[in-house]
Length: 615
Image (cartoon, rainbow, N blue to C red):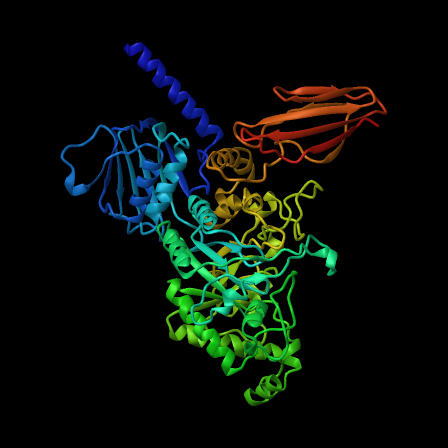
């Protein structure tokens, strides 16, 4: 190659990188890092690039090498001690000289000859994830710009929840769910394993929990009333064996994700009660695993028999999950059976408890003492505040922020996950009737992105008790893995940025129009389903104008947009949008514009409809 040609190519590459940095300052990275400095030049990753690690067995190194092997890029990995001579290009992974970084922080430095990923603890893994986001998916051998990133999370707890009780999902899908969490630096998988509609974890001492409790005779259809026509009359079930649980926990651990099991109590326990009636206040009552949604009158009874049962269950759970936290639920506990139980009323007198809320607090505190004695801590939904908060409990605030604020003011750790804050991903993503059936609520991407877990109602001293944020995915109306992914993505990308990125670095326009558009194309190439956002600059709306300018952009990189026009004076069948179009609307006329986005894998957005009037 002549010097002139080489300089021309180099100048072209530099020009492309400069434009990318100006229009896309975070280079499609989600979550946006704390600090990114763009430098001159670029790094060519090739099959000759040497990977050097001061600890080749570190989980981050293992993850990177497996990723490269899966993409036909089997670069040689050596330890620092085994280097014979420097390579022309090299990737160095190290934990040295990282003490100055915050916990989970990393420093990514890319020069023309070296990529240095230095990370503190899990930070090395997160540095690898950022590096991988700079590479084209399915083509790691690429030219990437020189830069320096210093990065660390805003919150220590960055969680994503999945309910497998209302609907059950296989082991391979749980791993896929964990994979996408890891890509975007979430670090706690809250696994909702027991509820009224199914018990999903094998407990060897109590086999009926799975032989009876993991199966229901039928399931409610949509929003139909409780009548014979409102059920599918199809048996439904499934559970995870202890070996499968260990497999998932190990898989998550390799990706620096902690798995938190939720064993619901004292409410949402009908599947357990149907299996072992002795744990309820009326053991003569015949009950079955719930076939519809909601909560139920029958709950665990606070007897010694019940506590022995739950302690036995929790012993096996603790053997399976190394997590510091065990989630014990505590939400929506119907007090009916306690109010009508002679045992409960007598127990309240003996313990000096004023009401059933204090009885629930007694229940939770007794479980907490057992778990604390075994080196574990409890998380509970914000109802555990009622009747008095257990001494060491962490509160997960779901009914708005009120419970979380109250707990922080009492100097208890808090994880914010309010449904009102658009962190319930079972809620619809737009108000269009084209959205699939859901439980209700409204949680569009922009509302999710705008949420800040730290309330202004807290003092600076109280704010430190907000240790993190989580989004929840309840599955009453989500029976398939495709629909889980549709409801999860792209909102989980917004959660990632809430949990990791400094508020000052957040920008919804850059996030939604540039970085999400790129990441959704990546996720599509990886086989994930997702909700395709409508074309940028379109929405269901009414406009009054004599001249309308159609200027839209696909919401997913590589996708196409289509539009159609209908009116009394102009009709155009659907056609691909390729350039801006101007429409003149005569006085007294109206025009209807419809648009949709179609991705390379033929995923489609809902159709938007804009009514344009010239009154």
